[in-house]
Length: 462
Image 1 (cartoon, helix red, strand yellow):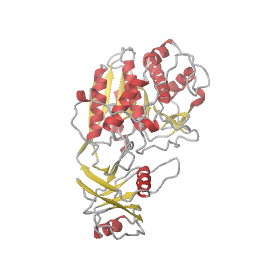
Image 2 (cartoon, helix red, strand yellow):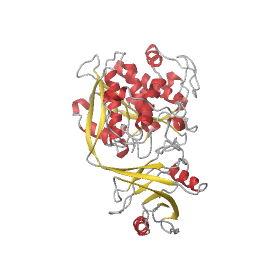
Image 3 (cartoon, one colour):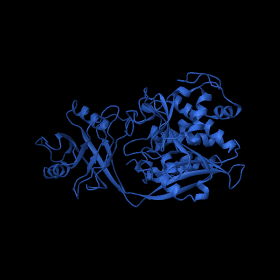
Image 4 (cartoon, helix red, strand yellow):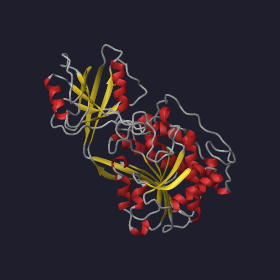
């Protein structure tokens, strides 16, 4: 299984990192040079120059490699998410911040891993899937794959006994189909999702609606479905091994690093944040490894820059389950502390290499401008990106919402398609959300500059 715990916070600081299939080239431009996609040259003040001169997309990439390649999918509350939390906390410790983990309970998780026995499937893809909680858990089975078509109208071959059956899933047909597979002697079932409309691709899922099925039943992502069927079209036998695991009584964590500002214990607070968890089957490079490493790199740069405001760098756990981590954090804040917040800069999906993602969206849960959106708009103008910035546009669905729900100025910032912020890259929430397939270090660098310059403008003058 991908989820293996055991490395301490300090241990992960020196852990080896698996090499990416293809590493993007780090961008290099001078402070006064035209940025990629910008329409005007920057007009930076001396404070902006302090930020942009210190930022390194190479540093951010190293963190991204640890999170996505060494640790992998970081499903909320599982051991892999905890390993990521310990790694992030160790880095913030190293930068000199007062760092704490904020633990909170989350729902049970049911995961699966697909192992290609013959080596016929691409090995540059994540093969984690979801396991049915009503199927056989904590078990490993192996057998040849048999494709029976739609689960609602399967065409059963004669040699199902001892095989792993794959079928196009429908929730209504699921219980009867699995029961029939069991009766025919199948050792496992892989359910295939319906294809979504481009640019969306279906994610891996934990199939519901089953009770005490005596074999493992798992749900894969659209790209995994396509690759399995493509392999079946050209080989006489495709043996797979599938393992399932149940994770119960789970605790997820927020990671928060703080450095008190010159204004003292009751002074204003400026926060930069992202979420570090991912969905089942996704390495979570852009969503939201990119926002996580942006936050970590800005924490490194700001560790050497005095500010009037107290700085907080926060990485949220279990965002993908409904903003659980950030809502937990906000609920613990007494009103006097909420009143100290000047701006929360939430960064979610800030580095995709998808060509149509040319717009940098300023997303506000209320749809209204606030200190965070105003500061990023002003920073964009100084950096030459005013034409690429759109908003504020009304949209929640990321951790800024948790703060805006209680009246704290916050916004989410993200590169997305130009038609609407709902136009996300095809690798979104998929096994293809990898460094090689879904990262632009140029966009990441620009995002770091925009947020860094904006946060410094607020933090130094609050």
